[in-house]
Image (cartoon, rainbow over all chains, first blue to last red; front, side, top):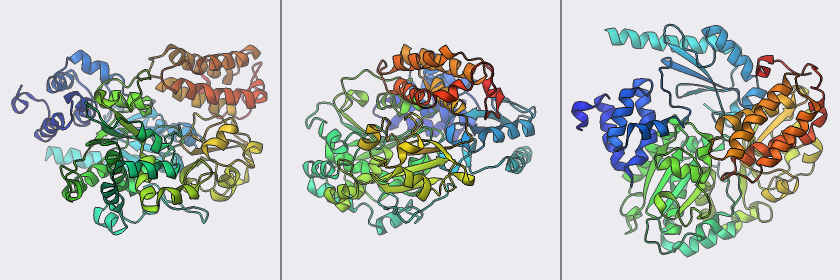
Length: 173
Length: 436
């Protein structure tokens, strides 16, 4: 299929995917990163995303699902615009990650894998994110925040609320 | 932004360009960058492998396999293309050293990959970063593009008739993919389950071709080994353990951080001297020496322990990834063991039954135990389960879950017994953890 006419992705991402399938000795090597980049744009791996990616790689949708279900960052339903991922693994746990997670739960009013009603935030307890020496650490989408205390939680959320508002206004303008 | 730390005992080899803007290619060149690759291009594969063997550099991912020897296993003649694969899927809890390498010195990874390629006669290298490291992947992508623009990568590297290309790759969340055969599966666009060995990757690896897989820290060390000379690098460390190691000290210490220390450096000094001792004047309870899969050590066991692969192995644990996790006396070991095993239960890919079932049962037992519903028999049962996982799986994830569990149960049996008969955990703050 022609990616220009049929694709569900933005022209920028579609162009990136056209290049990505050319990059490797074997086309299928593009699959895992492609799924992640697709999710970044669409928000989750919808049926349409799976179908589009399968066609680009030249494998069945079932094969795409088989691979996608393996990776913990890939999801099949929408998360919040900003996905707050709190690491509670050992190094973070020792430095108060559960207190931090509790505070996020209180402030957002949702638990593990919950999404706020306005769709701005989702919350997730995650495994080690590779910031052990700067614990406790979180990621909001791909941004790291490290060496945190629960008192810093409201300010972090406010920053992202502001971003969501600014982007919302820009989209309506 | 991760904080950089330093200590007078550090020997800065791999970290010597950290904090100096070396992600910029011109700065990297100004600081001596890419000279090692040029030298290797002139000297040829046999010379490179000899230098690497002389350096006693051992794999920094955790297994500690001698790098020079690993490279020498790749057949010189191969009908199939050969590959270099850099493992930057850093996911072992307690480990964040590669994070700093990608952030501060991405060109060292590229240069090391080029040298590995020259050594084994490969034309294509892959640098695989875990999906969570998106900002670091972007730094690596920029660095690779800059190296292409300078002609350091491409059809004619450094103006020679030698070709070497690099592709960067993103994962999407999976600890198991840090295992070398699962890493290749993931890079081939599949579920990250391990392959049976033999054949080893040096003979049949990525896309069926001979493949060298090295940890990102190992690869970033290579240009320094070449610059210093193998023997000089070896002299920095302890016998059979060349050079330095990036020790990531985390947990209950005053000054957590990544410190570069000579191999064989005393663990007690790492805890008390380098990292400033136990936080808040508390007492030391235990130390996990090399990432969460390595068996825990007691304070008396670290007294004269030198941090190299052989000495830590002799002490009944492993040097692993160099992630030193320090635990104070206000910590519940049962809770710590539960959190450790919960991770392996979550990350087990499910391919091998002893690991899939074993981690699940261990988590269930420990959860029940921590909630105060354990029985004396459970302690033996946990030990029995763990012992029966050891060595019975395709990849080391089963062992990685079983080994620390055995360490906790054997060394802290009394604390497990203190949770018996409905007694509340003496340290518990988070009882919700204990709900099955």
